[in-house]
Length: 185
Image (tube, rainbow, N blue to C red; front, side, top):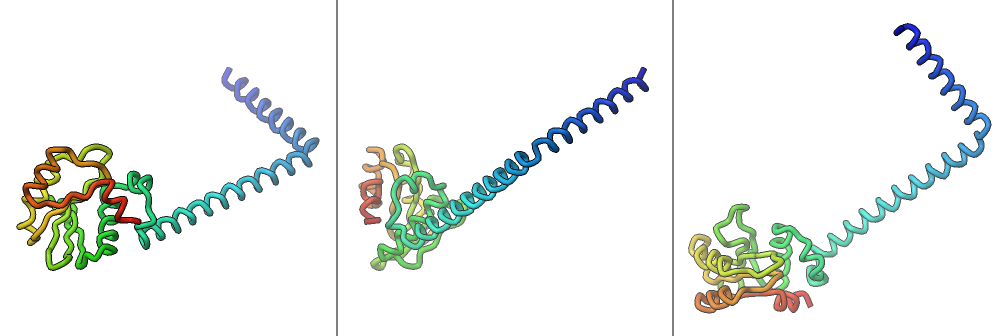
């Protein structure tokens, strides 16, 4: 029984090959035309993909060279680390010097910078909602650990009322979305 089954499979395979050969032979010109069109389409898609990658690369370089040309759509899409690096560039453009990012697992200070004789400990919070008092608490309590004189929290969002009150009572500067938008004008 199995011998008969394999013999019919061979016949079926032969019939399929003959059918494909016949279709190819009778429609060879059309098949070649379709193949050329498919190849050209594939090349065009590949070129568009490459152009898009180059364009994104240029935009990213422009973004890092001139952070002031950025908008909040780009900022809101950043990761936390990208936002920290972006803020570090903005701080340089605003006269801060000796800027450095702290270690990955910081104690409440993401960036340290010097301006007007003060060493600033800066907490950076990329947020889609309210930044709460904990961000202020973290940066204020970490100042001595990093040898900083002044505290600042920078966000692309807004601060809660409690965060604003806590910052005011601890001489901590808050930079929210509105203030940040003025930095890149």
